[in-house]
Image (cartoon, rainbow, N blue to C red; front, side, top):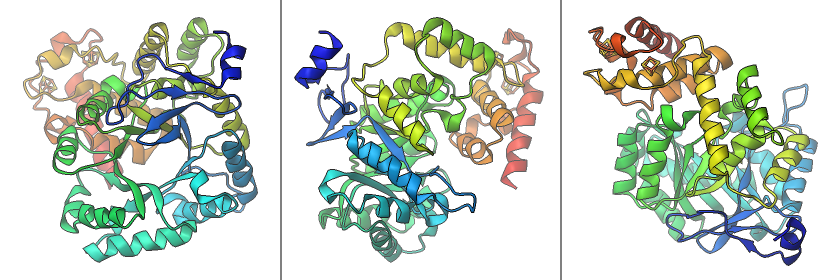
Length: 408
Ligand code: SF4
Ligand code: SF4
């Protein structure tokens, strides 16, 4: 079917192997003038959503409400009606700004996601108190999607201690939360615990083609999928790191896929995972919104050839960092302690390129404690397996030191 015929019919396109765990076989639904959507339970969710962490700012460092409203209006006009905010975004101002921007629309016409700040909780009553505060800030009476924000090795204790889940479940039964989930930056072990011991409607994971193989993203995705929990994706472009590609990585993309851009390629890659409901992009101006929405019109999942290109670009990025590790993983075959060497080096390299302290420390903490760089005993067994002749124990020590320094 030609594109025009396809659009004219306004009918459903089945996107390759699109399967949404927990929701049966999820079609990709494309209609003329609207971005493509996926089925989630009994609703349709746009494949691209507006993440409200990097909102447009004025010179006075305040949210540029006019620009934001141009962005939300464009989104609404094109079917991108899912907005994701959080208590802590933009110093607590994001919820207010997005609430104001959406006020002109009927409540049932948009999907609003918000997150509970675990770090603010001292007792169970705080969960409800803060939730009610968030409703007021957003000027709504319920949230469509609501998450425990950033469950990780540090926050899981508080999550359990204040019985967050029980309180949120009550709010769900009262109709104030439609779908209950969590956003996650912890270890696979914690994720397994969460999906085994609680019932969730969805979870939000950091998924992009760079983190996929090296930094456990694939493992996390598999855990969610095998527990039948659909995924919403955060950081599909790794905080902008996959937009500004190196010369060599960009040349590879242009050679294989001349008609795309790094941003479009990264967003499409994330949305092409079968169990993904929507991909959040922290857009900061109307131009970005327009370009990204265009990418998701009549969406087609990536072809096997494009998947190969993504793997190749990830390898190029990996090998161009200060530590010339190509993530071949040969060292893993011999390390008696199972130190996750390529993951550690990937995090180090990315920090050196983008300087994002929070991303580095948070991702470092997603590694199991037993496989973190500081556990290396300097036995040297890995040295003979490294085709790049890297001084692995020294470089691990450097990575562990960086973590300690940034945590301080
Ligand atoms: S030197 Fe460290 S990383 Fe290398 S094999 Fe020994 S414990 Fe593992
Ligand atoms: S063997 Fe060397 S290049 Fe390969 S993953 Fe390990 S450290 Fe990186």
